[in-house]
Image 1 (cartoon, each protein chain N blue to C red):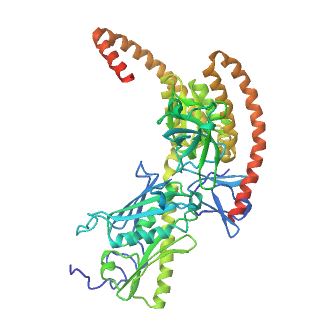
Image 2 (cartoon, rainbow over the protein chains, first blue to last red):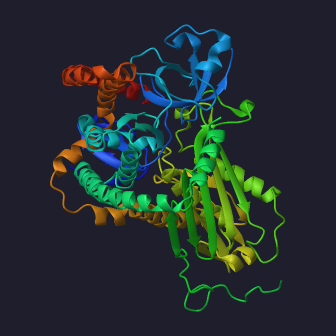
Length: 255
Length: 324
């Protein structure tokens, strides 16, 4: 199996039937359109190293509200095109005045692309099981072209990540990944995802990431123990009223 | 400024900087030097130092510039105030506006702008140090930066200039040759030799012009090779470090191959997962039952997916025919 790095304009095949995504046909021959990795199974396609997310119908994405209109939420979906969510696409009936109460500017939401028209008007939907506003967890941003690598073949990578870290994961096609779990688990997962991003073009990645996570877990538990001891020591050194001050500060910021 | 050399080519046929008449200056290319830009390239070509950043495709403002059927390319060529000995007045000038326009037009035929309607692709070329041939150097660097940004192009663009000094044609002019030569002919072309930029300053006979075109073609091919090397080298090194100790190479190659077709499949798996998750939120006690169902759901989805992929292939084939 060939996994060559190709560049725009590289000759790929004599047979125009081989042309897959990321390629074009000229004079009956197939050339690459992109700078990326060539895949030669069935047809030849090129998976780019970089690139923006271009919405297409039925994709799952994670969006952030950037604007409210009387009947639409407008979402930033990490793409050159903004997404529109009409109130009628929210699972429940919503009065226009109550829209900010449900999702306001800055909120992140799991969404599905309902339709994209030729002028790139993106219509979103939440009328699907599991789609919801996000109020816990973290969002990680990655290169959209590498999303398939995080999911893995038949979901192998993502299920491994779930198993090893006990986190909930939702991978949006637009390169935003929502994770939720214990803080230490999320830290580990974030590092694992960084690792996938850096080594996405290499082979044997799922195994290496798995090993990395296990080693990390062992190291973390040791560290945690050590830290716990330290903390106990520290606590004795800090006078009571410092805590009260800190608490008061925290409350203020909460409000 | 009376530093015009008496002779541009010595008795051995070598030029002022020791090059042959058909030799280009040494070039070094670095890719991905700017972390904020979507694609970037730093190029040194002889004494030219050029930094190019590419942003996009992204939303275009003001909206009146948007083209409903294709992306707009904005190319900004700019020389830093310190790029030459006499300070250049900063800001757009007649010269930089002209170069921006012709350079943009050098890329318009190769970039697949029709894939990104009403968006914009911004290219910023900054000349940090100039030594003749900055527009061609900027085009060479921009070509790599565009590829680095993941923008679909039919071909890389390579550019090179031919000039005439002492009545002889020379490839890739340097500063004195440019300033005091009899002609300057910058050309940009694709890998097939399709010319996307051609300008001329000075005088050439028809014969000389034809010969110059041939010389330029050879120069551009050399540059194209260097561009390819640079692009392949970006990942070459870490690939060498990371690849060893692979036990399940087969499986992982599958993953790479499955990227396109596999996407729809994976989404559906995700969907199954998410429905599990939402169940958790509403009543957390149900989760166990949910998880048991999970496998069944996944299997069903895999079946569904196989049908879906078949459909998908038909669709993509259709679109290809349209493209042709």
